Image (cartoon, rainbow, N blue to C red; front, side, top):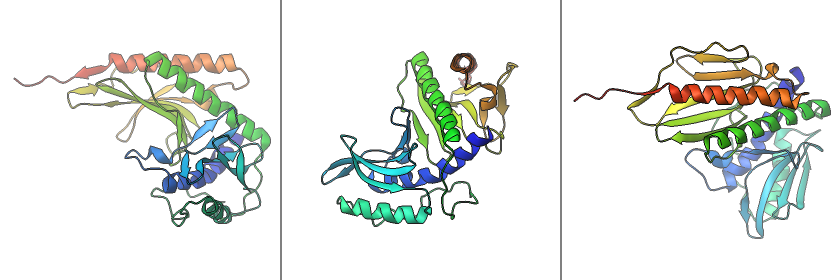
Length: 276
């Protein structure tokens, strides 16, 4: 788990470069989703969003095998390539700024600070070193599991949503509205101040003032926990409760977590009495 957590931190930092490209070149959305990413398990890379250029669409990616930032065209052919190892974040951004300019993009604002802050990593200004291949394989396995679990939950709910990685907190997640009164957030989060290891989470959001989720009679589970605080309410499943070497084991536990937690939310969605 320690190796996974370290890879999480280093990829979180490098992913901010893709977020900057999205922020600069992709039409903005109110929910900031234009800045997010996707873990592509088939191509083994982190992908940004498609960017319109005078010569067609391109997408910025981070190749998890060779650890290069790559610009790809719509045929997924490589048109620019920048090694991340042995360089600082600042130097990588300078090289990419030049590549964007070469394909007709106005890259003047690309290197500006993002509109959110992330964890202050002690290696943020350092020369980047090569990431452990075994750590990356573990990271890819768990994030692929997060993709699959998200897809399964959407299938269970018969809802539509993008499975994306949000660059601010670097969680693989989805949000969907299962009915007119209840929205559901689900995903795989980094270790944080609430839980010291990465964890799956599910939380609910009421969509009108008459609806409320009553956090009473919380079930006691062996593998996952409920958290009800002023700042966040929801259920969590620690990643160290799963065995990534047994796909069947991990999938069964995650499916149970999703099914039972979602059922609890639907059952405990109540409506306030209106005054006559």
